[in-house]
Amino acid sequence: MLLKLRSGVVYGPVNSRRLGISLGLNILPFKNKVCNFNCVYCQYGWTDYGLISEMKKEDYPSLSDIEIELKGFLGDMDVELDYITFSGHGEATLHPAFGEIVDLVNDIRDRYAPSSKTTILSNSTTVGNSEIRGHLSRLDGRVMKLDAGNRRMFEAYNGPRADVDFNSVVAGLAELEDVVIQSLFTKGEGGNFTDENLTDYIQMIKRINPTRVQLYSLDRDTPSKNIFKLIPEELTKIQILFKSAGIESTVYG
Ligand code: SF4
Image 1: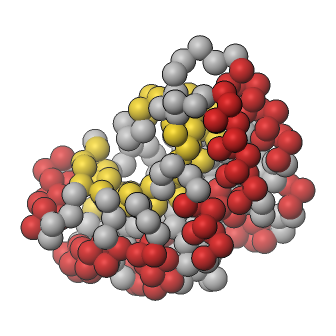
Image 2: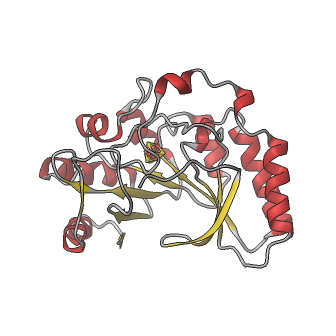
């Protein structure tokens, strides 16, 4: 079963494989998935680009909506959070006031949960923009998606909107300080676990020079029926390639 859309700004906290106790922040409109990718594996289903192009600023949660929900949760909180994580049903950096929200969330964290860190799970599509890179750099962490090693796989696997360019994504990631790359691999006709993609992908990762790569496969149902979960040995094969290229990685799953 695909996941339901989030009905508010704050969700969880969840005990995440990668982030520990993490409070999710969804700063996207509640009624629609808002993403400039259409990944074959998306747990929220296919993206409707037509719908997204009609979105206005008022459709997104406002700064005061975000402040009220986050303060309300943190004020009553009885757990110690490891992370407050921008995630949700789409790409958080598409919020028209993303930079102001980063500062707001950092400020609320300082006052209500000072031992936690702020981070983002981003699809990397806006990282070519230096202003967005500036906003991302004010978070404590950045976990950025890269599943493809070349434009052909990028277009087939992630289904980017027409304004998203593969080379600009890789160049932007290479400019970003202290970046963790997250990569979801699948096999089958629609998968990215191919020799050609892996060869190109390793080259792109070397260029980006991340602090670490997080490797994982499917955990949930997918909109595409042409992709399948890798077995642990297949993920380990990718990790061995990384090791020989001098890149640190962790396998989840
Ligand atoms: S980037 Fe995330 S939300 Fe967007 S389509 Fe891909 S998996 Fe779904």
